[in-house]
Structures are given as structure tokens and as C-alpha cells.
Length: 287
Image (cartoon, helix red, strand yellow):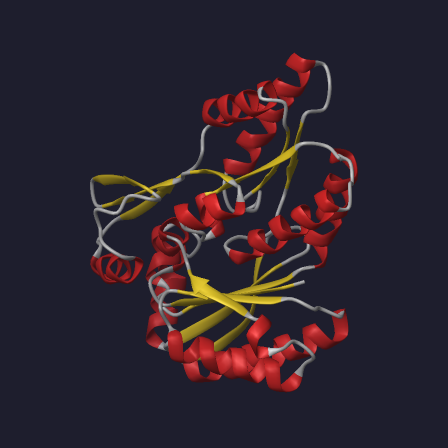
């Protein structure tokens, strides 16, 4: 069995303690509220729920990626310890973090004159990355090689169904994903979009609903259909503290598919992703 270490980044929406429990190396992304720079695991802003409240009041928000040198040092240190490395993090189409990991992996593989590092585009974020990380761990136990793991998990990433439902469009505007005109129209008509992630990992708006109630109803129906048609067996949900909506979605999926209620993992969206999608967001991931 190959000695494989999984590396991820903080947009997987796992806490530092959860990463340690899973045996992951987690690299921190950064974000700015106003003129203040923070790292993803910075606890100075209180709990995640406290952070969402402060985020809602922030006038200026931006995010930062993991740079090439950080990736390179991490990969090289792990290879020097005798590991082969699999990196899974934020989708290539959502951040330059992934392209930085590719540059670093190429450098390390060339240095050792052998493929020691595989980077896999999750085409997702948050618990979508977690689903793929769990898949890697399963394949390691099956004694798959690094190359086999890379191929299988990259194929799985293309099969995932992923959607985000942000209720505050101003954060998509702040991150450059909406124009001022689109923001104005959205606020005027109280539009709540359902944003899907395509097989290529790019964001695509499917439904523009009037209000969260209708958006949640559409999301429920869409994902029950997707779970049935694509044969998904795993469903995870994250949110920015929207417990009632998450529970309603979770129960509907359990009642209308073969996925059991207790198997639907739920959690909170990490700080960096929350800066992009806003403090009132639900995300769902199925494979």
C-alpha cells in the first residue's frame, strides 16, 4: 500500500480539529473584512455564527488564495517524509488556488523525477471537496496507486451534483460575480438564485426564484430528481447557520430518495466561502 497523505485547503469547510482527526494537511486561505486581513482559522472574530453576523455588516469583503510557495513547501516536505500526496480543494474555476497547486506539484514532481503529487480539481467547494476526500481514503484502503486514485476521483468529481443558494446577492457583487445592474434588479424583485456547478466546475444560474421559500422548494425537487436519475448515494449540506431550511431540505431528500436521514451530513460554510456567497447561503453536494 502506498503511503499517501491528503492535502486540502480551508474552503473544505472543515475545522482545524476535524482536519486533524481525518489526518489531513489543511492549508489556510485568507479573507479581508474592510482593511483587516484574516486567515481562515483565525478565531478573533468568534464562532462561525458570530462571523456571519459581522460579515453581514461588512462594507468591503475580499478573499485570498493559497500561493504557489506555500503549496510547494507543503508538497516537498511531505514527499521528503516518504509520502505521496493527493491535493483536493476549491474548484479551479472559482479560485486561482487550484492553478497554484498545479504549478507547485509540477515543480515537486520534476525535482524528484517521479510523480509524487497528484492534484485533483474538485469542481466544487465546501463539503463537495469532503466527499471526494472520503473517496480518496476509501481508495487508499483498497490499495489503489496514486495514478489510479487521481483518475477515479477526477471522474467522480465530474459526476457530482452541486448547487449554492445565496440569499444576499450583494456578496456576489462584491466578489465580482454580479454587475451593479444585476444586483439592482435582484434586490428590486427579491430574487434568490439557484446556482449550479457544471461538470467543468463553472457556475451556472438555473433558476431565479422570488424569495427563499420558492428557491428551497425548487432545490428540493431538483435534487430529488438528480439523486434518482444519477444514482447518487451520498448527500451533504452546508449553510451559514440556516438550520430550519437545512433540516427541511434534509428531511425532504430522506423521505423521497434512498438516502437515509442519518447519512446526510450537515455543517457550516467556512469563512472564506461565506465571504463570496454571503452570510445567508445553503449549499448541497451529492455523489
